[in-house]
Length: 310
Ligand code: 13P
Ligand code: SF4
Image (spheres, rainbow, N blue to C red):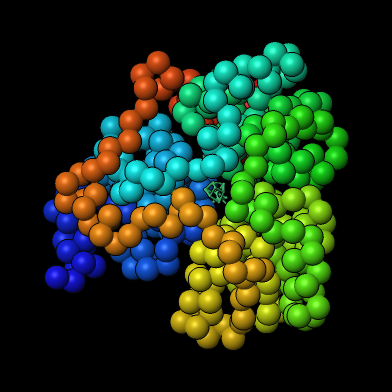
């Protein structure tokens, strides 16, 4: 059987869409309807008319899709697809963090559970974190769970104190300042593009810091021909494929070999096929946190529309 053909058949039969994050194994794009970063996929999840959303990504992304479009059946093809960073903070830990810093709005990275979102004031993704914090128009925020994205926001805004929880992404933290120095020596003409989940010292040494989408857009529109990419391997795989397909004549080099997120690599074509065929594994959100978590994610979209949520 040709698994791609079978997946397409099931999609039609069941009125389903497949959303794929750009850290997924690159072959998944061949059956995906939408491929992109967390923000883009959240938008697609919120507006789709399909009855079933198959989320080729990690659990918090599928959960966010459910919050944004509760009538739909949201499926996660492989239940191992968690996120180390999202698991670094739970409701009790958030409660203790808030108690240490009372009466300060909590900005919660979308890489978090629905329970944690329900106890936060507003959500953000890596591509709008700066804008979201700015929109609050306050002198100080608490930022959870990623300390590095939070500190990046503080640096970018300059006039807001960002007190961060001590979460981090183990994949992005594997990139060390010395890796940037080695890349500079090996590829003196290359531009180094880095995700803000990386260590501050790594960001400081880079040519450009941006979310997955921003990195991809920068690379595509730049006049430069060679790029060292300091984020997850899926980004390099997609950029290299597109450079070949559309004759960009550009070269993309992963900063070092082991920069891939194990959580993002669980999903296989077989998992996607089985997910559609047996409608497994449905992602739900507990009713006691649903409204709070939904509000937290929706406030992000409102803030983007109005420029202020206060
Ligand atoms: P994006 O917001 O860039 O999609 O990043 C998601 C993520 O998990 C990065 O590690
Ligand atoms: Fe989570 Fe890091 Fe993987 Fe992103 S790359 S899903 S933050 S573990």
